[in-house]
Amino acid sequence: MSGRYSLCATRENKWCFTIFSGLDEAHIDTGIPVVEKEWVHLVGTYDGTMARLWLDSKLMAELEVAPEILNKRREKEEDRQQAAEVLEAQEKRARDHCKKQTDEQAAAFFKTQEGQTRMRQAAMKLMEHADFKLKMDAHAAEKGLKKLSKREAQTMARAEYRTAL
Image (cartoon, rainbow, N blue to C red; front, top):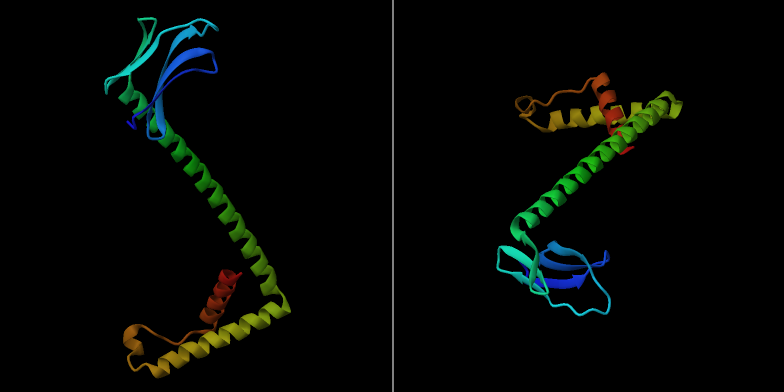
């Protein structure tokens, strides 16, 4: 508990005793409406376990605070988890939509003359790069490096273009 307490009249016009614990709170009310211009003796007690609200020397309500606070925290955690799940689902839909749109744009680009030319150039560059690595590394075969085929280079070039897009 944070040591903060409140005795007040609620918006529903009832006497209330509130105990704060971090961002959570537990409150009890009398259930009896506040009468304007009438003096009352209002007392709220908390012994570390039970909260009690007294009105004119009569016990009006009591509440075990810890379970109330734990229930509120559990509800907040469930709400947070539900919100996170909704957000994850929205993000997945957005990513899937973007991936689909990117694939469609890439496919349309690959069909154009410019797209075919650029993919041929990128594939040639990848093949030359792989050949250079093979020539410069004496242990290339042990490392699993090999010469790229034209088809592999084209596939890699298309994948790089989709990633860049």
